[in-house]
Amino acid sequence: ETGVTQTPRHLVMGMTNKKSLKCEQHLGHNAMYWYKQSAKKPLELMFVYNFKEQTENNSVPSRFSPECPNSSHLFLHLHTLQPEDSALYLCASSLGQGDQPQHFGDGTRLSIL
Amino acid sequence: EDKVVQSPLSLVVHEGDTVTLNCSYEVTNFRSLLWYKQEKKAPTFLFMLTSSGIEKKSGRLSSILDKKELFSILNITATQTGDSAIYLCVPWSYSGYALNFGKGTSLLVTP
Image 1 (cartoon, rainbow over the protein chains, first blue to last red):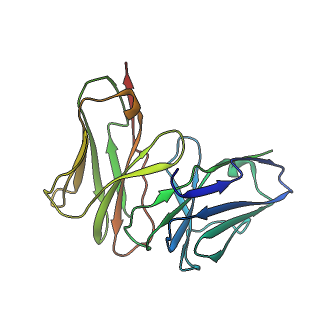
Image 2 (cartoon, chains in turn blue, red):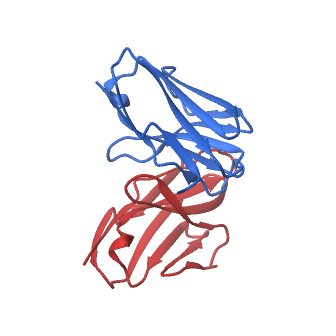
Image 3 (tube, each protein chain N blue to C red):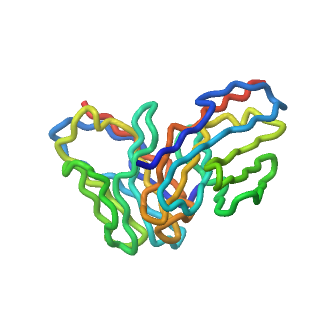
């Protein structure tokens, strides 16, 4: 139990669907992150939020839309995804933004049909 | 462009062996280096290194940083099958918010 919970654990969706990934942390952290991990590739940072404000968008396509309503919750809204978007999506949080150790959730395994 | 190179890319050892994992980096405005262990899913934090020559230890794991030569090593003594994982070395810079994750070293410890 890392203190970071992601739901759902698995998601299969068609290219025209709209779905959302949810992340919740119970660690009192102020920074939250979305990462993508494709098969046999390094973790790729997608978005960073610090105190609910987006501070980093790593050139992510607009079909991925993050939302951070408060420091404990982070969403990733998905629509009209492509097959190459199939991957493990990991959420992480840290006390502050910067070189603070990040605590990761177990991820959502996303498959696009 | 920032760069992280870990070696070896993969390694198979027997239980009880000692392993040394290497990480070399080129990062502008280097600030610190973090080590993570990734088993089946989420990476878990191991160490954060900011100063050269100061060894950090946690049980059978230890790590050290050389800021002059731009590398770090992670040692695991008396390896166990539970040490099987991908080990990620992540340098951090003052000028960026992003952790530069590399491909890591995949370690397999056989009984």
